[in-house]
Length: 223
Image 1: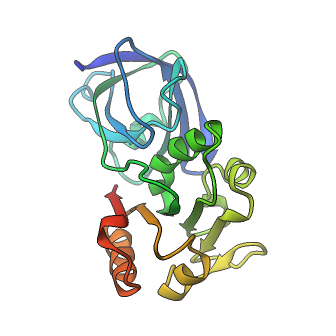
Image 2: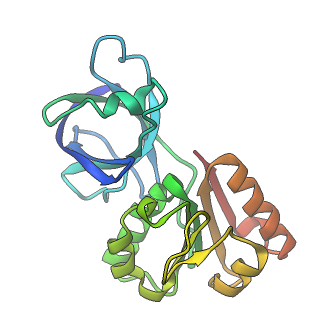
């Protein structure tokens, strides 16, 4: 797909540092739940500054939807997104992404690493195939949890939160450990989908290996 400009239909904050952006959907774009595209800002000086972001909408929708974590302290693309408004344009590049659903299991996400799982879990819900899939979601504090209400509605008790810097009712406290995985995962014989910052992904791979999870059943992607 050649680069295509799309108009922003809405832009707002989902959390204090995560933008929820909905855009037009260009002709010819096709993706699978969990995939991403490279996005550029259609403004002078930014048209060659692309960054990868995951589609959180379903392929069937007539719009595109993204959750993008911003870093106001960095003078980069995500910071510039904070200046945008409805009607401004983004430029989309090719579709890519390594996270693909391979069967029931446990999703493990760190922060904005949850974004590939949003479309996948929405798709499973809409097709009646949610089954006993679980989501273990690690964040610093409750205010960082992306789409907490929607995940709760979709997954119920299979939506498991752990917070590293805050103790609050209904959320585990600390970091994901081997014991935490054993206690909360679907099954150590089922699939594991892991996405987050590189150190987190590496730590999860090591823990899953220590738990003798079949490497063929571990799907990872770093952001």
